[in-house]
Amino acid sequence: MNKARRNPFNVFASHAVLLTYTLIALFPVFVILINSFKTRKAIFREPLALPSSDSFSLIGYQTVMKQGDFFLYFQNSMIVTVASLFFVLLFGAMAAFALAEYRFKGNTLMGLYLALGIMIPIRIGTVAILDLMVSTGLVNTLWALILVYTAQGLPLAVFILSEFMRQVSDDLKNAGRIDGLSEYTIFFRLVLPLVRPAMATVAVFNMIPIWNDLWFPLILAPAEETKTLTLGSQVFIGQFVTDWNAVLSALSMAILPVMILYVIFSRQLIRGITSGAVK
Amino acid sequence: MTALILKNVCKSFGQVEVLKNIDLEVEEGEFVVFVGPSGCGKSTLLRVIAGLEDATSGTIEIDGKVVNQTPPAKRGIAMVFQSYALYPHLTVKDNMTLALKQEKQPKNEIEERVRNASQMLALTDYLDRRPSELSGGQRQRVAIGRAIVREPKLFLFDEPLSNLDAALRMNTRIEIANLHRSLDASMIYVTHDQTEAMTLASKIVVLRDGMVEQVGSPMELYNNPANQFVAGFLGSPSMNFIPAATVGGSPEHTLGVRPEYLRINGAGRLDAKVSHVEKLGGDTNVLVDVAGANTMTVRLFGQHPVETGEQIALDFDDKDTFLFDAGGRRV
Ligand SMILES: Nc1ncnc2c1ncn2[C@@H]1O[C@H](COP(=O)(O)OP(=O)(O)O)[C@@H](O)[C@H]1O
Ligand SMILES: [Mg+2]
Image 1: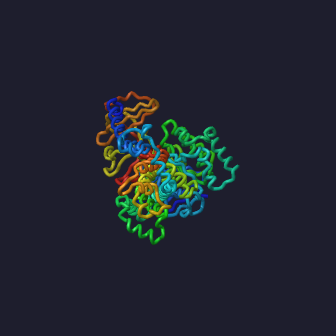
Image 2: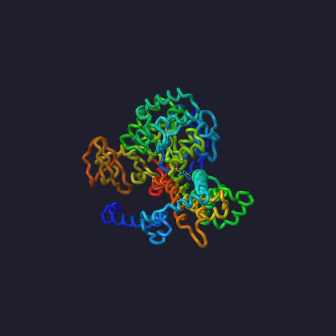
Image 3: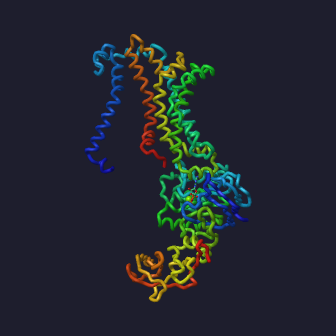
C-alpha cells in the first residue's frame, strides 16, 4: 500500500484523476461566475469566453439588487440554514449520546426507528406537513422551514454521531462521573469536543441541501418576507423569458456563504472522513 | 472501621452473570489486590464498587454506609484508569482540580492540595501542560495525582501499569507502594499480573469467572493455595502439574510442584529431556519434556551448564508438593 503510493507513476495517475475530477466539478461554477459578469448578448454568443472590456457588464447584479429584496432573501436563507444546522447538531448529538451511552429497554429499536428516516425521503410527507403547518399557523414563517429541515437532517446525524460517540473512551466519561460532573457536563464538555470532526461532517452534509432547497420554501413559505435565496432567484426565470444575467448573478452570490461555511468546517470535515475514529 | 464491605454482590449483563456472590472486606489502610485472568470480572467489580455500574443484587458498604444508591462522586472514592482517562482539553492542574471545583472546595485548600500532590509525584514543572504533551509515565502520575487531591477514603486502581513499558512499570510499582505507605489510605488495585499482586498487596483476592477463589496475604496464597487454579496463577514461572500416578500416587490426583523446588539429580524420580534453556544470569529456567506428563519448568539459581537435548533426571521433596483432586481442590 505504502509502496504503491510512493511509486511516481501512481502518484501522477492519482493526481491526474483528482485534477480531472476537480476540473469537472468546478467547471459549472466557473461558467456561472464568468457569465454573471457579461452582457446578455455575450453570454449567448460565446458562453465560455472570459468577460472582455467589450462584454463586461454588471447589469445582472444591478437587476438583482433592484428587483425584490435580495438581502432579505439572503438573510432568510442564512437564518434557516444556520438554525436548522444548530438544531440538527444539538438534538442529533444528544440522541446519539443517549443511544450510544445508556442501556435502556428499546435502545436498539429506537436506534433503528431513528435510522429509518435515512431511507424515507421527507418529501413523501409534504402534504401532511403542509396540513400540519396550516393548522399550527406556521405557514409562511421561517420556523416552518427550520422544523422541517431539522427533521430531515436528524436521522443521518443520529446515525453518524452515535457511531462516533461509541468510540469515545468509557474511562473518560467514567472519570468525569467520579469527579462529580453531571451527565450534561460530560456530554458538552468531554464528549462533544472529541466528536467535533463528525459534527463538521454532519453539518456540511446537511448545509448544502438546505441552502439549495426550493421545494419546501415554495410550499411552506412562499410569502415575500420569508422567501429564501433560491426561491427569490426564481423570479428571474420566467416561462417565456429568463433574465439570465440576473439568474447567474444571483447564483454567484448564493455560492459565497456556502463556501464560507464550508471553509470553516472543512478542516474538521476532512479529519472526520479520513480518520473515522476518535482517539 | 472497615473501609469496604461487599455482601453477596452479583452483577449480570442481560443473561450473562459476570459477578457471582462476591463477599469481601477491606480493612482501613489495607492494600487489596484483585487478581485474575483477563475477562474474569475484575474491572466490573471495581466499577460496581465505584458506582459506575449498579450491582444486580447485594450491598456495598463504604466507610460504614451502604452506598448502593449513592452516585460515584459522593462515595468518597477516587479511581485511576488503565487508559489514564485524562481530560484532553484541560491542563494538568485543571485535570487535578476539576473534582475539587465541583465539590466547591475553597480556593486556597485546592491550591494546597495540588501543591502537595504535585510535589509528591514530581509534577510541579508540568502543571500547565496538556496531557498530549506528557509521556506515558507522566500521564500516569497525573492520573494518580487527580486521585490523591480528592483525599478519598478508598483508592481504586484499574490496571494502572499495563500501558507502561517494563522499566517504568517497576518504578511506578514502587512509587505506588510508597504512596500507600505515606498516605496510609485503603487501596484496591486490579491487575492480571501476578508479580504486581505479590509485590504490592497486603491482601490478594484471586478471582476466576466472577467468583472469589481465595483471599489471603501473598505468602499465605503462595504457601497454601486452596486449589489448583490459585496454585497455578501465583508464582513465576508457574507451578508444574503432573498426574500423581507418574510418581506412584493415586490416579485421580494431580501433583503440583513449584519450579524452584525441582532438582536436577542423577538418581531422580522423573526422567526428562531438556527442550529449552533460558539463561538469565542470576537464574536458569530449564524447560523439560517428562515422559508421561506435560512440559515442566525447573528453576535453578545461578548459572548451570545445561544444554537443549540433554537427558536428565528430576527430583523433589514430598513436603514441597501439593495434591489436587479431579475437581482441582486441594487434598
Ligand atoms: N457493559 C458490558 N456489557 C456486557 N458485558 C460486559 C460489559 N462489561 C463487561 N462485560 C463482560 O464481563 C466480563 C468481565 O469483564 P471485565 O470486568 O472487564 O474483565 P477484566 O477486567 O477482569 O478483564 C467479560 O466477559 C465482559 O465481556
Ligand atoms: Mg479490566
